[in-house]
Image 1 (cartoon, protein in one colour):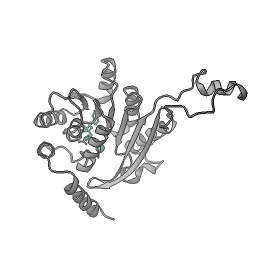
Image 2 (image 1 turned 180 degrees about the horizontal axis):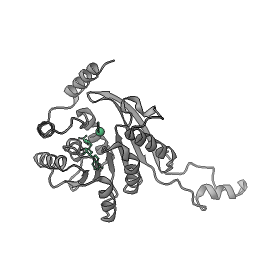
Image 3 (image 1 turned 180 degrees about the vertical axis):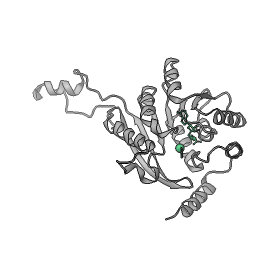
Length: 256
Ligand code: SAH
Ligand code: DHB
Ligand code: MG
């Protein structure tokens, strides 16, 4: 399997299922013309983000890492009337290109591009009570993924989706000895995820026009119920002959 084949298949999928769109196409063209790196999500990945936002019924979206606003436009287009999206970008030039692209897409009233390092912007969002966000897309510098994930949890609610891009990195993620801060960031993120009782997550490896990488999808399931007076705790303390009904599954436990 080669990059050439992955790209050809991505093109086939996109030709079939992702119709050309003037605003999205213009955003990519303007980003390239301004010299931005070609690291936006692929069109079929942008559509995946869009579909996930629609599925979630997201009204309040946070993106960390704007670049030229390509993924931003895909996500913002899933918002209902009155919905909004805040996207964080550290590079002045990227933010400027993104704002132009977002205006061209007719999303100026929906999307706010906040210029600055995400780790400076995130505490401000919290202080301004901008959350909770229904969907958070983490796609900035990979070394800070653990910190972004921690903030994402802080700014989310039960039912929120957190999506993290670039978590496989050509397979380098399994190299425990890697000195690459991006790889270490992803590995530390996976450790946080594995130990975090408030979420349920999986990662899918991807190949396509953007190479071999992966995407993590995290559902915030909330803190597990462990109050001493919960139905389960009562059942344990109550002798069987005094129990009113047979044990029933508790509601709210479907998602683990
Ligand atoms: N989400 C975009 C691609 C983002 S590329 C898309 O798919 O269309 C990553 C972006 O994160 C770059 O624009 C980079 O400038 C930005 N970035 C890197 N470090 C950052 C930081 N500390 N805070 C905010 N943005 C950062
Ligand atoms: C890089 C960043 C991305 O978000 C991406 O999707 C691909 C590459 C990068 O910084 O190299
Ligand atoms: Mg990315």
